[in-house]
Picture (cartoon, rainbow, N blue to C red):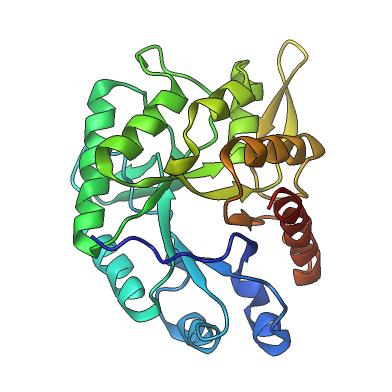
Length: 278
């Protein structure tokens, strides 16, 4: 099985469709870009990537494999991902510890699953199926969460470690998601991160979140990818790099999308953290 090629330990951005034309014209000095698989199935967006592939290392992030569902994976979605990989040869391929629907129903959201031996086996089997189909290693991202399951028997960090060790994948560690979930559920974010061996982490994601008021005068955090990375998340990111070592780091921004220059500046901030620790 082919592992992803090594890109320099640097910061990139998630390139969104509304920035494609400007990005092609200006070709900013960014180390790498990530695109959402489902946003680049065909047409002008695919053509735009053809223009960028020789200049920028490319990562592809899927949101629709539904690795955590109990039923079989979509063969059409697997073929879509393989076709993309065959054409663009991304240095990283990733999806989520989540499910997005069942049979012909797609819910357009990353839904949580209980952390049990049963769900672990299901998602490990699905990851191995994807890797065998692609002939390469993939990365799996920890999702943010707003509720827990009474049936869960495995700590989330231990679940992520077991996924990587049993399937042969790597972890895409979303530091913002760790921060959001730790706030919502009252556990220690650094304890989570300190459990994970640096050798199992292939990439880090950073994004913004939103505070909302819930009953009993409490605050919940929502991972909406629609704001600057919070200062507390930057602090957690720095501690993560110190603990796990520098990793390719991506800035995600998917709602309330600002100018391309704003996102590039956030990426430069991540690059400064990486440079200090290298």
